[in-house]
Length: 423
Image (cartoon, rainbow, N blue to C red; front, side, top):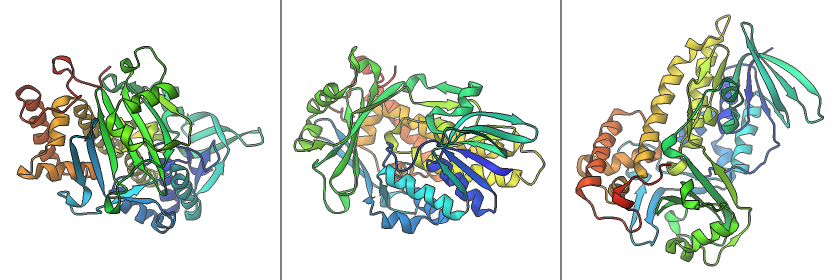
């Protein structure tokens, strides 16, 4: 019997398995796909770097040649207003940069690292079902040859991403009605980009009812995507034609991608903001996107997934000292992760209101509010010195909605000042 079976070999799953193996536990990763494989979510946060160091994966990441990300930049759709948040200017001392990654390479590096640390990794193995009992957990798998096999462990870790086998089976997922958006995206070669230490900046472009991401990757490749509520489609499908029209109608993007060539299909994801009612139970725990997913405007996905892997694996390691892994072993993990997710979720919801976006584009240095926002964007969540300043920032944003404390942004004001991005 294994100590833990981890369903899914993405960043959350590979991190959990690697940490368990580092602690001397016997972990098995079952990944239904074969890496490398395409995945979205290429922009990382500076707070991920200490996690990479503890995993022992930093040399491999540097060798992969990923582009360095020094800041997050916010731009209006017409390009007239630009606000850059350099991570080195945050209120919390720490890493001043992160990486922009090709996820097919990045995820491969993390999974290989889990294997190198001692975890057993099986790719092409699909988990068909699971059972939880007093003696632990078991999964029914199908191997690459099509044969079924039942495997047992003392605890089951669901890191299967948005499909979340356990959360789906138990009916735990609660969709966020205020962030019921869709994303449409692709990759391009030859898009214009900045140079020097700004080359790797992620650019968030404000749209009338949502936002665009522009993520420069190594070489000449750029990831481009739009997140918006479904009503902007007006009955149309978010296909290639619709995507091209949306780019052309956004002056900043039309100029930046004028000479670019699309080199990947146009893909779409919908209804993807959610939180599970429970993150754990007797003999099982959810990590990463299997537990929750937040609108990706602040690039929190990989970081929260890996951080969850660290905290969940520590809880599992402690719990394995007993006969049965009970839910109470994960109370600390779940409380901390819920607080972190809720903090970012509220910040994301604020972003979709015109008043909030205007303050974000015209931040104040008083009380180091701009620096606190920078630290939150870098991943410093749950710190008191950041949190009280963010609460003041949010209060100013709410007041700005009614009082007009900052200049209005072109193309962001909804009818009657209504919230943009809500369903």
